[in-house]
Length: 516
Ligand code: FAD
Ligand code: SF4
Image 1 (cartoon, helix red, strand yellow):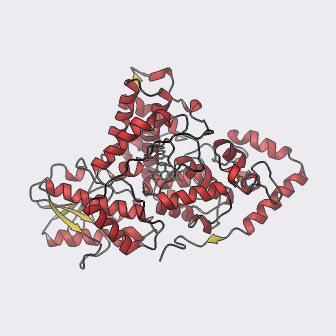
Image 2 (cartoon, protein in one colour):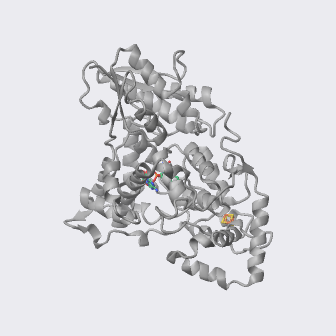
Image 3 (cartoon, helix red, strand yellow):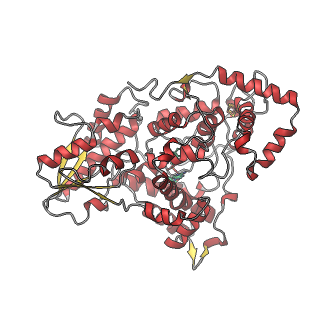
């Protein structure tokens, strides 16, 4: 037999199942296809990252004597659809099967499944780069009414032995979140990112991204994502040395000026295969045992990867395809137009979106509590918001983006993922950030021309969704406050919110103004 080993753009590692036990005559294929680059208008950094990283990985494969076919965007015979292109290459090389590991998206996986009995059959393999497989998650989820992260995470700690002393968690607790909620008040010295050198391959890849996708969000002038394993390892070491110690306590903080704070910015490298989640967790754990960093920082960091990252992936694969169309709060609003150009006078949103445009990055709390929270309070429809998150972040892949957007941000899955919606007023943003002092609105006012829009929208959200949410024990306190509010005040808030929503300009569908 002569297999074609198809390596997808987010599977750039020698440890990939597809590349194991490859016969000498196997052909490895990597394909740049326009269909994948354009089905949402991906940020130009994200496209540059994929092109540069894929080309470097193809080179690394050749250096290890693999026979590689690389389809470039500009090739005249490129079919520009992944399935068709792989089949065309398989035919060209006389291959009798196509092997591929699970993709990061249901859409592609389903299309591949449908080709299992094609003339050149597709053989689908599990992607073993995670701590758990979808089957492991399904087994864990079986018979549970609620799928809470906390219990899943504890089981993974026991399974892997990370931060464990026998059966007990190191430090005596599973969770140090209580220590991890400090806002940033003073000007701090945040670690500067390492600057990666751009070699000939990277420069050519970025030039191609520019040539084909200059209409997409962002510019490549400040591109600095790691595109090789070596560069990714530099970023990992840099984070462990300079970011990890403060990661915990400032995990929930938001800054008006600093985009990365003490976050690792390792998600994109991990998601495309340049780093393994195991080595990232092990490096963090080792630094704890070396005595350099506090337990709340390391536990908080490992929880994100061993806990959240695995958990959302398990949820995605066990809930799809119906998950994608759930919309339990019945949201119908299009995405506000300023999500594409940051043209808003709400400072927190302006900064989170501008940083996104600049870097194809925003940290978790910006995604969850600023852009996400605002979309929740306005009732933006899930597909519009999902397309946006999928397009704008360099780390975005549907298996991780969708549960975060649909489940965590929009509470669209009826509480499968989160026990309550992450809704917050301007008061929360004021507490956790230094945005409000630069804003034309006041977080202390609920009505009137200077009132922070988040405030009236917050109460309006609670009111309009009361039927679904007021029985939730975790929302009892807040509904108590709403119910005790004087009728006149309630009416004034309602009018304030409705007036705001009426004049909110929305962009129909995705792709404005950067999609063509
Ligand atoms: P750090 O704060 O340093 O965290 C370390 C690592 O933990 C991350 O690199 C990531 O791999 C993992 N992690 C942390 N939180 C989560 C989470 N909630 N879900 C899964 N993994 C997590 N992450 C993506 O990788 N791709 C996405 O497309 C994506 N979309 C998101 C959409 C929304 C609406 C929200 C609220 C979150 C999304 N996240 C996504 C999760 C998270 O925001 C990013 O992983 C994180 O901001 C990446 O930055 P970092 O590497 O500096 O993370
Ligand atoms: Fe955001 Fe409101 Fe603060 Fe302005 S006042 S920065 S809109 S939370």
